[in-house]
Length: 109
Ligand SMILES: [Zn+2]
Image (cartoon, rainbow, N blue to C red; front, side, top):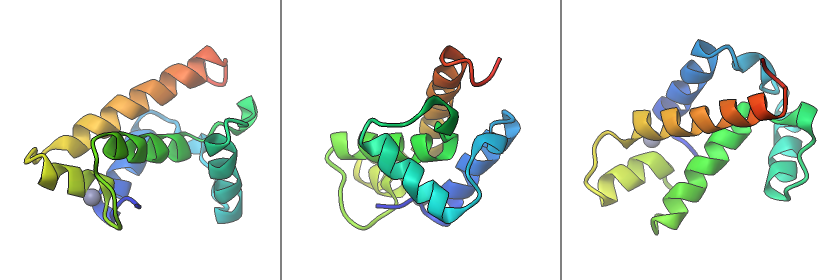
């Protein structure tokens, strides 16, 4: 599962709006390493990547709702649950949580 272009663009826009984009790895290799670290529960505080966390938490949420497969987790959950506007809600919810996590770890003020 992977976010579609539209939902990825929405997630990126939300991170930029909150000035969290600066914490996102721009190197795909670093991004992959951070994804693996987050999944293994081994992320270092300085490497908490807002984009990685938001995307993975959205994937988790879709899976918890029984949505699997090779689709965008948001589009597919919207379709299965007949809830057309989950994207903004989920992106907001998980960006809130990431912001909280970063503040808690004093990565941001
Ligand atoms: Zn989508």
